[in-house]
Length: 151
Image (cartoon, rainbow, N blue to C red; front, side, top):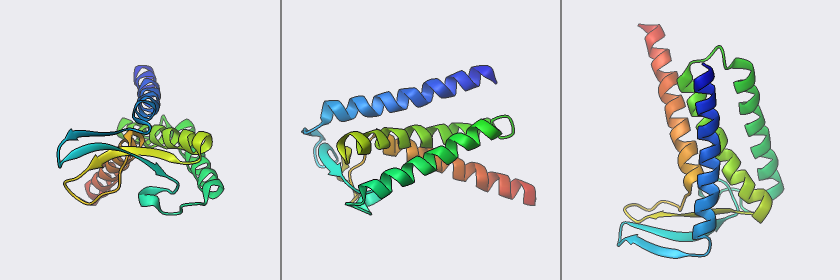
């Protein structure tokens, strides 16, 4: 388990660093990557998902810190009792949350830049991808566990 713990720590730090580097490199820039499909379009998001809650920065920061604290406490207290998939998903959610929290504290907004033109979807960033993948894995594990106990 020790090697897995080190791997999870490295993964979490890598996601935070990659998120911050991509935001720094693409800050203020608009680039066409694949015409009519994928662009990097700089956006300042003052809210949370889909811009909900704009202009409530202090409440958003406090909420983020509380949620991240709950995840950290859960990992610390239950790491020996839950399977690796759950820990993996929580590290993805945690590191993505930290990446966006850094932006909120330092800049007062989150930098989003990935703009997929195939469908009408708000811009997002590396931290958002990490959070969504983490939530997806966690849901799959929970649903799989629920149905395996029912059978």
